[in-house]
Length: 542
Image 1 (spheres, rainbow, N blue to C red):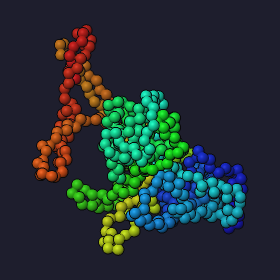
Image 2 (cartoon, rainbow, N blue to C red):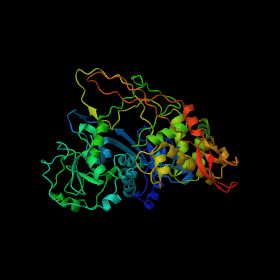
Image 3 (tube, rainbow, N blue to C red):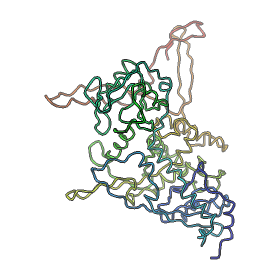
Image 4 (cartoon, rainbow, N blue to C red):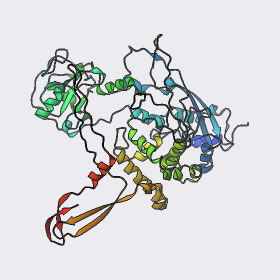
């Protein structure tokens, strides 16, 4: 075809800024991605990602709504992964973060114009401005990739105990190779108390690193909260810092000064032991993710509508369990699945990645349509491939799904929330309550009746009855709730007999009927109450 008349509009466009989300990996309104033969069209105006499927055509719909004609179609193929020998050291955290996309995939890009019918624009990359825009898209970290990188990071900050640390003694600690725990003979996994200089071993860690918990014992006795792990101190002034009071990893902004109190010069330090994060990554790489049932037999994969899995984004199990639960309910299925395409055409939000309604429709389509419920087509590019033994039997393990990545949904729902915006594990019940609140606010914004929304199935009233023990008068109150936490009584089973020299028996509990939990929840309790009828404090029954 002749040169596209709309190519000149590229002169007024700017490459993506660091703060902008570039949806180059996946369509913002369905889970079609750049690994498919058709690829993903990335808008060169707003960097929205749209599929080019003939049935859903979200890239074309985006043009029809916003009149952004120029896109770059992105396709990628995974490169074969190099084999790693069993004796090779585990990947370090820095290696995971710095691995480049071009090391893992081959990319193919084509400029198209939707004002001309979505056809390829010949010689478009000869235009310097178009070339700048396409390079900006390809060099930007996609929103999905940002989530993957964050899943390897810990959100470590300084706490008040580190900022207000007071040191009580000053002396020179033994050289690293000569140091040992003051309560045992361990010479590794040693933690130096930054208050008094006590050297105590840590707790046993992933990867078989020994420890008897004498550092923790010192805290329980002396209440000195901040310790640093010897062997992790670097010349750059970084190290593993742990606060026993917070029970979490922390930063010490004045680490160099605190260490100098005990004769340690950070400029001469060399890292000799694995950090906690490295140990966690090594543990994850060695973990056997084969799925088995209670009987020990491997689970068989299932496929089809309603049987689509969600991939872990990094400590996102709480979110996945809530998503799978709500979309198993008929009210959510009926609300978000049938009219997904209608909403994509009529949505008032400029960018679907910023619309909660769009993301709920996207999840419904992805989980319930069955379109993405099939065995993994290609090996996981993140997997570590080990050289098989010549005598190893042929692998007959089942092939599971690749799983959908609800990265956009998580980023949108968690935006601005202190907990759900992080990559830390969270409480599923709290997330459910927060999600229902967000959905109700969205319905109110769109002037929809709450009784017509699927969130209504969670709403119920909990009636409380309070009766005065003297005048016998009763007060009733009904609280609107979406969920209720029930107490689960823990009754230990009698210990099994142990043969001489055998392992001690594991602690087991008696099974609990749900009815028992409900009876305990609704049981009567006595409390002190100021009765308005008696005009005095009395004992009331609730």
